Image (cartoon, rainbow, N blue to C red; front, side, top):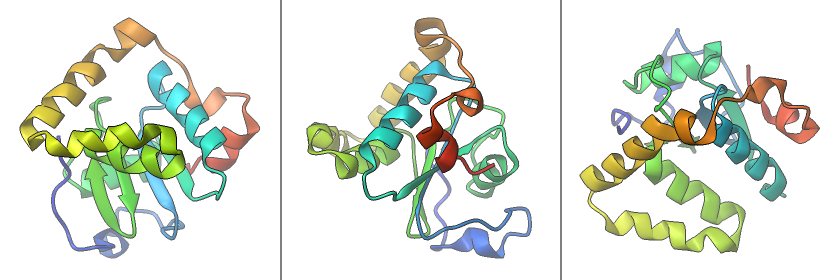
Length: 153
């Protein structure tokens, strides 16, 4: 489930994508997923340099970014990280993001040794079963002020 390859910052020329602060890392995730809500709280806790913003895929910006990169905005398995205008999907995006936030996630970089098809398969298995395993949550309703401050709606 990789995003379509595009020129860096191509979303700036897409009239369907609302303007946003693209000088930070933007993560598009499912606001209804408990696993994603946990990830958002973890990002807020680990991001000491305030580099990351979160766009719920159910919101206008998140939806537009997913569509811009050819991902299904109605598929809660879609996950996208945009940094310096480049988009990374699924396990690739996570393997890039989390080791930058904390050294303890460095082993996540090992995902890059796996073939793309296998990375996508692993991510799809987790994503497709996350509601059954982790349940539902409302990322936008979390009382955590640090998460709320990072949300791009």
